[in-house]
Image (cartoon, rainbow, N blue to C red; front, side, top):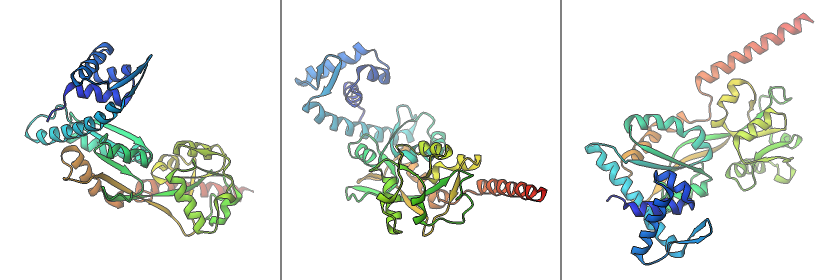
Length: 331
């Protein structure tokens, strides 16, 4: 089943609610997009969009049609992926939903081998919160989602593929930088940088602290951030200590701009999950991405420092210790 062109134009306009952006995505002129929508509405005998000036919104009929249009798109992509095994791959697309950390720090490494197998594949990555990514999956905007905590949803297939650690970081010259481990109670002594209230990442940290006798009102959370990179830069600038996913830390650790401090009764781990709709097994690029994640397994995405990074960090620390020792002897 190949997606009807007018229906595709409708779907793109409905998703963007912006004629100019829709025209750019469809490689059409804006009048051509308007004409396609008008023809579709006339053939159905019903308005799909409300228009007020330059603002457009979906009518109730448009909302209903969009649900079916997304299902048709998903079926079209699945059909093209299956047919690609018999010949060309023209038109094959893969829509992936991924929570922010996975989308930025993990997914790019998986896309390269996928594109080697599917050189004409077009990949669309939708990044967002876990709830946003799951909504995109259940409304057929994406065919597979990667999230950082397993949802308790009987209508979805959920499979664990790894875990990540929420790591405490400090500036290299911080008084805690050389501690072998930190007790939760000590965290009330410093300004602490966390993700925004309501985020899953923050809840993991608060749950760990509460289990170890520290309540959220005791924390000095003067600055909240809605991005991992923001927290890393804030710690580098001396605004406090912070918690970030280990997946996001490799560059900063190699540069020596922050240090990771182990936690007593830690680490704080969260599971990484693959989620897709109940039904037949995924085929084509989506199925291959699923296989890549399974083969990669927990060990490769584990929280431990990779060997090459561990070696560099050890060499850097040994050099730093030697310099310190030399300065002490000089005095």
